[in-house]
Amino acid sequence: MNHTSPKDLNLTLKIWRQAGPDKPGSLKTYTLPGISPDMSFLEMLDVLNEQLIAKGEEPVAFDHDCREGICGTCGVMINGQAHGPDSATTTCQLHMRRFNNGDTILIEPWRAKAFPIVRDLVVDRSAFDRIIQSGGYVSVNTGGAPDANAIPVPGHMQKDAMAAAACIGCGACVASCKNASAMLFTSAKVTHLASLPQGQTERAKRVLSMVATMDAEQFGNCTNTGECEAACPAGIKLTNIAQMNREYVKAALFSTD
Image 1 (spheres, rainbow, N blue to C red):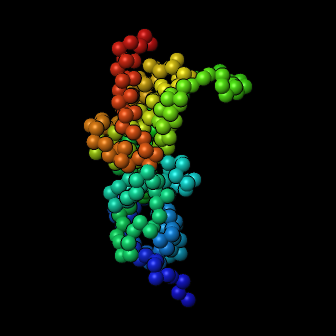
Image 2: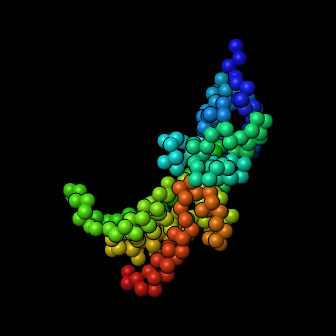
Image 3: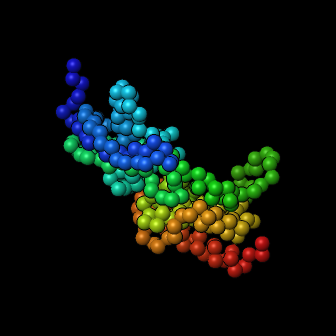
């Protein structure tokens, strides 16, 4: 019995397959008929994997977790665009209605020296974790939670901090940048805490340490192309990079640490 709909999509997928970090990789072509336009992009990959498993073949490895556009895990390059053709959208939020019947879709992992490929579409983004560990926090003594209004925060500070804190750390900014720069990610974390009263004590130390770690992880330099902002699913602005540069210069000139 045929369960397909006239609106279903018949697709050709060209997917990067790589068995491991030290293994050679290449693009493999798969024909995938009968895909509902209401499926998400990851659901489409689930269907492909079910078919591969049924044939006794290795499924395509790809990162995913919440599938709600929150965790930042699902990033891949789709036809050369980070997270695909829709703006302010993660891969898991992208729906197949965005594609046409008969389309060929190229699916690749993030490409960056600091994001080594683990397998197929999965990359190691622990470099981001090390940047955060180097200073993306506020040191406080443990104890009971303070009252919500114990430290008044002006509205404009709250707005700036929350806009920067929206970064989900997916790595699209790095993957889309011709230099594989992590400046947008790092600047969002620096700006978030520098905008709040709680972040002032470690302000200078934080930016110096995080920028040094970013450089040590071999991310590239920013040349203000702006593709990072265009690819960011959380809408993080380039102005954060300018803010981080100001923070860094001030800290380098006046820090006593």
